[in-house]
Amino acid sequence: MTANVPDGFGGAVFDVDGVLVDSPHQRAWREALRELMEGEWSGIRDETTWSPEAFTPQVYQQVMSGKPRLSGARAALDHFGVPDAERRTIAYADRKQTMVTELIEAGEFEAYPDALRLVLATRAAGIRIAAASSSKNAGLFLRRIRLDTFAREQGLGEGLVAPGQTLLDVFDADVSGRDFAHGKPHPEIFLTAAGELGVPPERCFVVEDAVSGIEAAKAGGMAALGVARADDAAALADAGADLVVESLDEVDVARLGEGRLVTTDD
Image 1 (cartoon, rainbow, N blue to C red):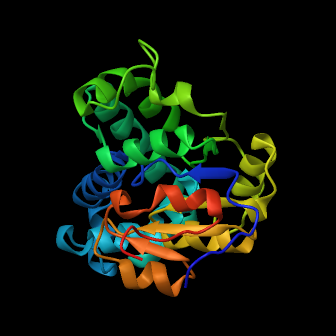
Image 2 (image 1 turned 30 degrees about the horizontal axis):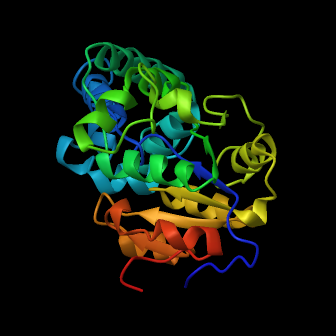
């Protein structure tokens, strides 16, 4: 399946965690639950399916990724059959947030170079770009990533990025971390991003790594580009992605202006 937009793409919407940044969210969710299960929740551990080995990258991608904090916490507790999950959700979410903030402040994350190249190339092609993450921590990541340093290291040319410019600075809109009425797979966050870009949804494509994000993009009438960073290409395709790649370097940026979401090999 490939997208074909006759007037060409005018907007691109990027998820953050797992697309732009290899963030510590998964680690924080996994370790926060381990601490609870081995500590104050140890009495219910045998009533659940949880074990340290059971919290895999696939569980994170398929059950939690892309969801707001409380929804993600509840989804994980339900997945592992934790008793009285509704009451325990806030404690789990709070433990995770404390942990992820500490990891971010310690610099325990890095940007994906292929994503930064696509952001800069898309912007250079005249396509307006937005960041749209359910995470309230997204801004912390985007402010800490220096694009001028990256562009210089990559030899991307003078004038592409201004001195001192961060990843957050290059976006035309950022709707990350807002309190939307509906989380993914509802398209509200992406429709809001398209609105703030001033581009009709049907002329936008969304870059996502999670099934719920792909479903949200398609529900909003947008093209969906899935990046399979967790060996989950089949799941992203099954969710309706128009194109699935393992690296965003595979995307043919020159064809975006033609409204084609394809790889350089197509």
